[in-house]
Structure formats: C-alpha cells, structure tokens
Length: 477
Image (cartoon, rainbow, N blue to C red; front, side, top):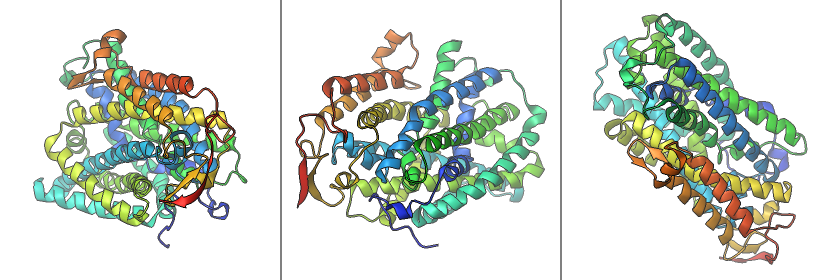
C-alpha cells in the first residue's frame, strides 16, 4: 500500500471513498488499547465503588460525545482536517490555535499509550521469560512500540483504517477473555488502599471522575474527528448518517475499553497503580493475550494519534511534508514517554493532563461549532488553504490572517477554565465559587462561546463576520 501523500490540503471528492462504517471501525478499533483502558482505572483510584465509577464514566462519556460529535460534520463539508477548517472562525493564520491544541492533545495521548502499553509488556515478559524490569528493557520495548507506531502513521489513513478494522474484532475478543480472567477476584466495593474519596466527599470526587475519565475521552477527539471524516464524501453520505456513526463510534470506542479498565481495576485490586497489579494478578493462561493487547492495541491507538500530530505540525509548518512532520513529533512523544516513566506519578500526571487540556480545548471547540451553525455548513474550501499555499487574502483573511475577536474569546475562555480547574497539585481561585467542584470545562466553554457571540453577533453565509471585506487570495508571502 503506497504512502499517503495528502497533508492538510483539501481531499478531492473522488478520493473520499470512506463511509460511516469506516468511521465506526476506526473509532472503535483504535481505542481498544491500554492507553484508553487505563482511564477506567481513575475512578476506582479516586476511592469510588464499582457502581459510582461506572455511572461517572458513562455520564461523562455521553455528555462529552453529545458536545464533540457535531465537529465531525465540519470536515465532512471542508474536506480538510479540523484545525485547518477552524480558519473560517479564527482566520487562516488564527487556525494555528487549533493546530497547537490538537498537537498537545495527540502528543499527550500518544505518550500515554506507549508508556502504559510498554510498562505492561515489560511486566508480562518478566513473568513469561524472566525479563528484568530495568531501564534497558523499558527503553527497548518503548522503542519497538514507537517504531511500529511511526510506520503506521507515516503510511497514513488507509493503513490505519485497515489496522483499526482488524483491532475492532481482535481486541474485543481479547477483552472479553480478560473479563473471564479477572472475574474470580472482582469486587464492587471501594478499594480500601485508596484511603477514601480523593476530594474528601462523594460528589466532588464523582464529578472529578466524570470529567477526568468520562468527558476527557470525547474531548480528546475535538481536533481528531476531521482527520477521518475528510475522507467521507458529503455527496454520497448524509450529515445525519455521519453524525450517527460518530456517536456510535465514540460511545462504543470509549465505554468498552474504559469499563474494562474499571472492571479489571477492581478485579486486580489496582488502587494506586494499574499496570503492575494488572500483570501480577493475571492468571498464567491470560499472559499471552495480555501481551498481544498491550502491543497491538498500543500501536493502533498511538498510530492514529501520531498521524494527527503529523497533520497538525504540517499545518503549522506548511513546508514540512506530512511524513517528515510525523517523524519529528514521534521523537518528542518518545521523550515524553521516558519522562512519564521515570518522573511522573501516573494518577497525578493523567488527571492534570486531561483536566488542563479539556479546559483549554473546550472553548475552541465551542467557537468552531458556533461558526458551523452560523454558516450552515457552507465553507469556501479553497480560501481555507491560503496559509498552506503561503499566500494572503481570501474570505477568511480577517486582519493579517487572524480573527482577533474569536481568538480573544478562546483565550478568555481558556483562562477562566484554568482559574477553575482542580488538579492534584493546584487548585484554581474560582473553585471557591463552585463549591470546590471542578467545572473548568463548563466555564471555559460558556465563557468562550458567550464572548464570541457578543463580539461577533453576525456572520455571512461562509461564516465570515459581517463587515469583513473579503480579499482575493492572490499575493504570495
């Protein structure tokens, strides 16, 4: 299969041969990995019992999917990825906000997937063959996972889609067998080793779990969905079927692995760490399936994240090819893996990462969706590519390529979100107004959306603010 040559340029309709079923396959297959499974461990590690953990994950995932899924329709109409498409609201240079947010999201999740998958692989190999869990062993395993991940990401969408189809079947079977493996020691009671509720009482801890484990899953896709729907033709597939495919793919692709993580957390008594107890309590007959799940699942998920990172860096640096950009960000992701392994506490690092990026990314998503509703899904795909052609002008040029009003609305929303976030090592000053409950994503999204509506009350059919004079995209930078 040839290497994909497309970067963030507009995909011609004749090349847009995917459909909603492919969207479901890629969202399901790529998420059946330890990098997603481990988020199901967070609620038990916060001191919640089984039913409270399940309800927090389900509630957060459903709410997050309802907010995130409509973004899939943007790239269905534009034929390019979401960060480039956001140029209609932020300007053809201002869309760099989305590129940076997407790059950070994908970077964090890529590193997390390789980190957790590698740790489980080393543990399993230790039980099977006596491999010593030292620095060299971890380095070799991380490097092997990274190499396989880079290969899939460089080859591009078609290879990743084929991989996701296979993983959707294979990983589902491995997880079903895993339920049987950990069922003998399963309990619905809270794990006593956690020392009680993380935030001192039930509801604040439950809401933290709903955001960190449930809502964070769909929010992680705010810049990723367009990577897949840009290959779906709006001429052959309706917006409704694509939206339904996105809902199904996100709900199934997130709840199946995360609830498996929750189940195994109680079955393995994984209160303070997940990877170690998962391996040590596994029956001998499940070690090989667990090794397959850790390796294949990690490559599938990290490959898609790395592919998205390559597109986002390609959007930031138009002269870099997608393949070179993918290799460059892979190096950065591997550095994060080693830092995560040697320097971070897993629970604290994961919680801080998802809450911070949720607070920063939500207002960007809200502003992008407001623009989609206002222009009724009608975009000028050619004008969105001005920055990539190193030109200037067009209907989305605004002021020197930036829509300062939308950018200011996003910045203010993100700032308020950071002031309202509750992390293991930091509590924002606005928490006193919310009773100590982390409502950062709600506040950041509301503030960003309201400010954007106030500053930009009207827009034209292409989503351009009224009064903005379109320029012809003819001059070169």
